[in-house]
Length: 326
Image (cartoon, helix red, strand yellow):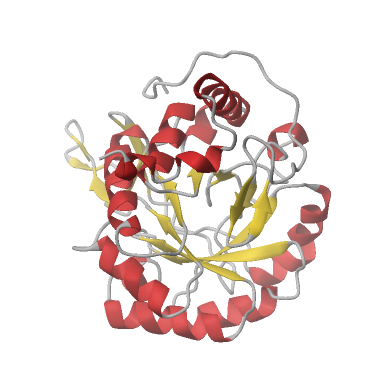
């Protein structure tokens, strides 16, 4: 696509098997050990089985599965992708096979891979989110739920749930009641005070926060004189939004004590480190996976080199360091 600044191809490293907590990149998130702090963001890596090279899949510390709704969704009509300066607009609309087909055709694959598995839950209402979690709770490989309270490309659910404080509080409280698995809430940046929304999630029992999802954006064809997306508006991702994501993580970490997972515009190891210095315990990479699927390997190598050069024993030592250095 020619719009991302990615580290030079420095060669692939071997697939990373799970490491002990003493490994340079090994972290703990909500008390659960991860081989490294880098996850594949929801919607950018499918359910893992679409990627033929398992060494790439297994290089991630965790994989956030494609968003799941209770019933199958066809998503929004095309066109639904538009390239923008340093980014991309998408209006996919949560296309997915639904919970029943996932359990029959996709869940078995999760036993073949090593990363921690996070299911992204995208019900159109509080009650549907509850139903989805009930249906998935027996899948042993799923250890976390990431509640999608932030998708801008659907008329019900998503951002509609995450931008209303009272509705968000009920969403977290009701989903918290029905599962003992770890609960992450993915927040939208399209609100006045994202830190306040994070505080609501913490007070209702969330174990962690993911920030941020895409920003609302729009593109118009000057030649055709009409919107380029059939849905008119879409979610902006890519390097253009990274400063917004870093700011959001910084602000959230000043308000809550639960871990924060940073995402938005990451394309290389330096971007990951920036989020962690702002306070993130872990990070997710998304749009860059469309550019080069195996970029995760170079990211991990860059993070290891950073630790070695600076005498850092474990990557978690840098979490929030920028605040401490003020």
